[in-house]
Length: 452
Image (cartoon, helix red, strand yellow):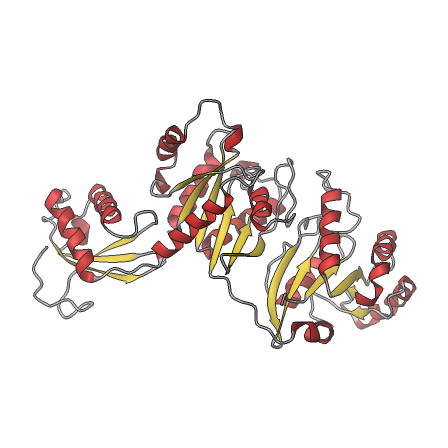
């Protein structure tokens, strides 16, 4: 049974996103005084006193979008209204009735039985008197709230719970088994990919760069398993970040990488690589995240381009993630979308794999037989004693040696590549650490262990 949906609707700058964050107690939606910041439906599933529901934030109704996306924003508002069991019609309690409030009233009139009027920004008691004129909108007495100070939020949560309890029936939503984040520079096709994945216009797709601003969590099922896809704002060069909106959008894209289990790094095959692609690859590398290199718009790639040649090219321009598998897609037609998710599932499995100490030490021993590590200048000859895996996601390996400082970066890379070949981590990042062996038992290894 689907979760009950509560939609927040209203004209621009009445505090819908602030109210959304205050109700869920999370900073999910971008809050910015500029009108029209929110464009897509931003949703969050949360527990309201043991009742689970989906709260949806929408763009400003009646906004004149700076990028001519008004029709797209309006379409997303209509989707949210159609799905909602409860509609919170938010107005600005300090400004009184605005012509756009009246326009929103016309939109919501036929849903009147599901609408509750919320007068936001009522920070002081005397402001409540100003909300009386909202009665003429025809939705009854408004509930006065302030997302900023917290006034009325308890009553608002009670109102929501009262209207969704019966629909929820106490069901707990199934937790996603995997979170995948879609990242890439602007116009790489992330939103088109998401819509193809879920089979609906879940997010706005436009040729306008920077259409997506929030990070949008979208749940879907594949093979009976719940997966969460995170659509992120397109990243651009630091020097070209024009305003706070783009800054926060980029920060949330980075945060999405951190909270994802697997990253789908979308690359536009019709454009050259640049600083943005390399910067994202470095972030994925630094966060030790499994990654699929999704080469999108492959149907529009240069004539004569082969997947093998492009793969070689990727290895040269993105050396930080040369271990990542590649998937060639055309999101606009849905081509190879499912195989990308299958590949992400396999990487997720690899990142959670554990190997025995015996298997790990055998792999290191084989590498040492092929290539003995040279000492760093001024250091004694390195000796390897034993190794063990101490964590997963990412697979984390600790190698005990006589002197960690004697291991060169070149040899560390060699050993990493050999371990990736020998162990079931061949397509995911590995965290490899060297530690000095000390007395006593460490991870079950004997005190007098001989060098490998």
